[in-house]
Image 1 (cartoon, rainbow, N blue to C red):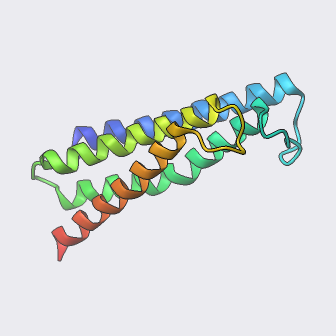
Image 2: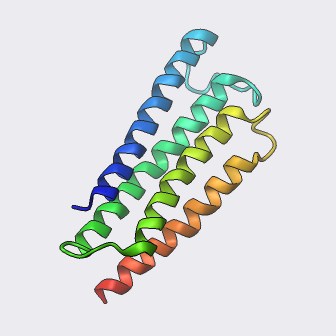
Image 3: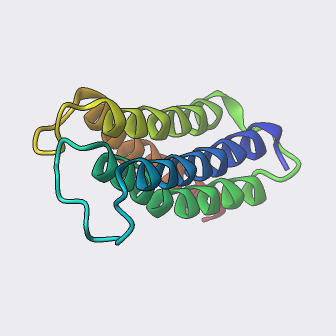
Length: 136
């Protein structure tokens, strides 16, 4: 398996676990234990919940894509394009999570969230198409 795929997969897992821990810390700090109790769109609890939830939603899909990429490129160099896509997608997830945590309110888009989402969508789609075309 390619080192970059393993590192980026591990980063996605670490991000999700750190956001889970942060959510737990916010639950304790805000005394908001019930999962649907946080309603303040500018409050730290709801920001933490959404950052973690969104990370968890994408981590598995992206790790799966990275594993498929590793299988398709087994014994071959990933090349600059694939390597850059994997790194960009991983960095985008970090930016996206940061955007949730630093935004003034969840009611308005934050540039970090927008950039993170766009790179995730376009990069993930590009990588999936490259992998698909490689096996056809």
